[in-house]
Length: 111
Image (cartoon, rainbow, N blue to C red; front, side, top):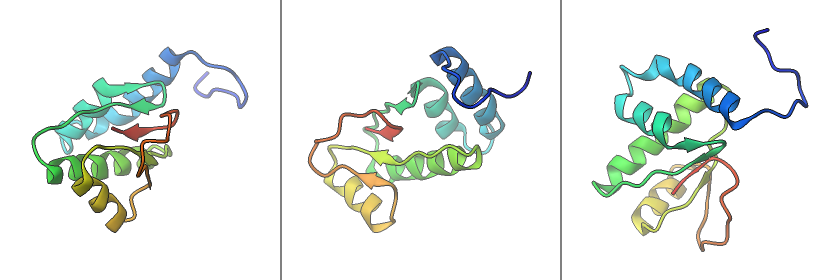
């Protein structure tokens, strides 16, 4: 069996294994983004902290969106405490950006 029928409740392990399988082809081209996705995804939430630079965080989030889009997954909710990063996301039309901290993160998102 290489497909999971619609409506079946799966364990987080199966979801994690599926995501890891799909993202591993990006290891060479997007090494840092691959590592972030490979180590920071839990079920359907992505928790990643970056302190290097706003531009680096923006590039990683943009690459993560592209990688997951290629696997037919949608990285769409974003939350950060950086006003500059929030501005970059908004200017580039990236996902739904949380402005006030109201969201409980129950969808894929970068913190």
